[in-house]
Amino acid sequence: MLTATDHETAIETPHVETWQPRIIAFLCNWCSYTGADLAGISRIQWDPSVSIVRVMCSGRMDPTFVVKAYRLGADGVIISGCHPGDCHYQEGNYKALRRVHLLKRLLIGFGIDPERLRLVWVSASEGDQWAETANDMAREIRDLGPLRLPT
Amino acid sequence: MSIDIEPGADTAAETTAKPKLALYWASSCGGCEIAVLDIKEKILDVDAAFDIVFWPVAVDFKVKDVEAMADGEIDLCLFNGAVRNSDNAYMAELLRRKAKVLVAFGSCACEGCIPALSNTTSRAATLDWVYQESPSTDNPDDTRPQERTVTAFGVLELPEFWETVRALDQIVDVDYFVPGCPPQAHQIWAVLETVIDILQNDKPLPPKGTVLGAGDRTCCDECPLVREEKKITGFKRVYEIIPEPGRCLLDQGILCMGPATRSGCGGLCVSVGVPCRGCYGPAPNSKDQGTKMIAALASVVDSQDPEEIDRILDGIVDPIGTFYRFSMAKATLGRVAGGPSGDGRGTVEVGS
Image 1 (cartoon, rainbow over the protein chains, first blue to last red):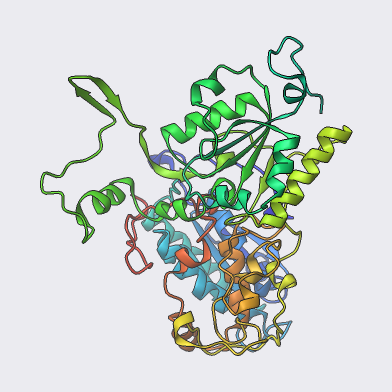
Image 2 (tube, rainbow over the protein chains, first blue to last red):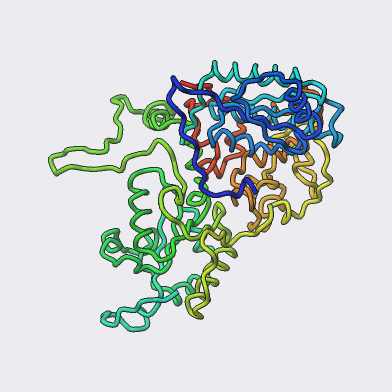
């Protein structure tokens, strides 16, 4: 289980001149991952700093995954699920919505810009929207610079 | 575990034959010490089973007595309190060397507890508040504690006050953990009884890193209140509501840390209508109590509309102080970077 793993060390933040953002995108299996897949088969280019992790539902996104991503070196996190009303599991995306709202408040408390966490809705037919989301997030994180978590 | 007995010891054979016990307090309130005495007359059984070699709150052995011991001479050390200055760290390292088994005893040693809440602010801000800004402080010359002061009688030294409060296992290797603020008397006795049994009957020790004296479920599992899994439309602080007896506090909109807290206390607070504050630390299989609580809380918020969600969440004042009240030293995101946070929303300082 992810949260039970011991003693993991954060990846060192590289020097500013050579720095490239690391963005982790958690995509739901039913809409967003398929959407990103569509972007791939449609040969739409998107920023290579975004790495995708497939989860079954955006409602599966434990806030622990997000903070752990930051701890292990991510500069930004995207969570993407089905559009409201379209969730494969009826209301998992609403659960994600509520968690993200509360988690952003926690991030602000920790002195982390809440823009480093983004919740979006991407359907299976929205390959271009996915590419746009990824590029937009990468641009935003490049502007914000590396996230240096205090130890 | 084998116990080395020095054949040439000058005291009575029966006292030297007993395993050696040390108890120490670092950055703590003293509650853990009282909790040890809460086992009442059983403390005599502890005395019968152990030779207490160091316990600053109760017996008059000095640090130099511990320094003079051989490495590993103490069989069991119960260490309570967080590590927040250089003296705490020195004692942690000393007792780690001298003790065969080192136990992080109580929430401060396990997760930082209340002292670690100062990780939400800075060392400078803490000292400014204590020595200058607090309303009850009268310090016109701005006298501050110095690490080194030269006087006519010699040099006086104070420990270095750290920027960040640490849990014991962030400083030294820890064998076992006994959570709780403080650990409950029946749990302390259960742990001591187990240790006595292990020592006297030569039984194997539990695996290293085991959490002792606590349950392996969540506080909710021990709670006598009835949960209907209601969705809530607003959070209420304890002074704003008289909870209906017998009903789940979270269902009534009172922020209760039960879902994200380890069991073991026996539902002490919740059974008298007071919400769980989370003192037994993160639940089994979770490391971060705060984010687990966010996951649980968001599930009960009754809205699908972003603005309404925000209105409901406004009822949670000070998210960090509430979700990490006892586990700030172990928060995945570490200490707060942006300095004093005031209303809990904080100053955002990133990428600098």
